[in-house]
Length: 193
Image 1 (cartoon, helix red, strand yellow):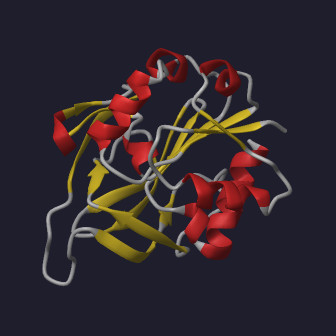
Image 2 (image 1 turned 90 degrees about the horizontal axis):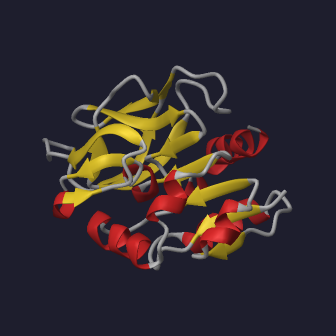
């Protein structure tokens, strides 16, 4: 299987690559549209700011090619947020693959922002390799709103979509590469999709 990890000049590329190497894969890290398009599966990783990441995507000429992908694609953390139409972070226009917006989390008593730590999932899609009650690791200050594409949620001052699914697109707000056995099951399910 040819797995491409999109290089947008920021993010958690190394830890994501290592997570897939544990399954015996050798992911290709690339910012080249042809290499990405020829992969069987694609991962859009992310740690950082939406505006910077979208500028890097545009500078590499990947905006259109990413939108055109037909194979299974997984966006992780910021990579999931970039799938949406827009983000409050830097007033960013994103890829527009999934309808909706990303907005800043609001701090609440006992729930500082960023949300960094383990949260329990409520899962409503049996294709994810996860079950309601599984704990996964989050590190984010922005989140999308729930919608018809929401496949799993966590609570953090409000209901936070932890996973979205839209056609061949899958997004995880949490970090599966840092979520132990549950994260590994999720990544294995993506590879099997």
